[in-house]
Image (cartoon, rainbow, N blue to C red; front, top):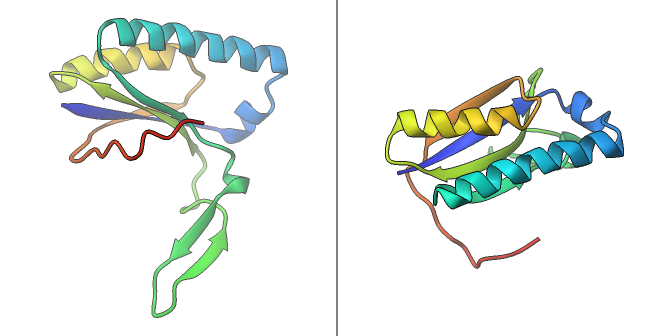
Length: 123
């Protein structure tokens, strides 16, 4: 089963990292990704741009596009991993690895009910 590991934290903490701190953080994620890949559990990994780059479409009689994230929150969704695990317990164990590689305030583990591979775009 596929599980999403949603990484939440304070965007201000991430954007205030020095270049060296950011590179060290990314190196930690790379180690975790290699480990999960070797276990054949790693799916797509996404780091989101800051909420200042986001827009939201509000539905109504006329859809309205507004600046900013979809909800007012103290913590922001910073990125996500998609993991292929047999059980929720296995996903939780893998999420602990992800958590060790970031300064996130919380990780939300949520089963994925549908996954489309899309057109295999690359960054």
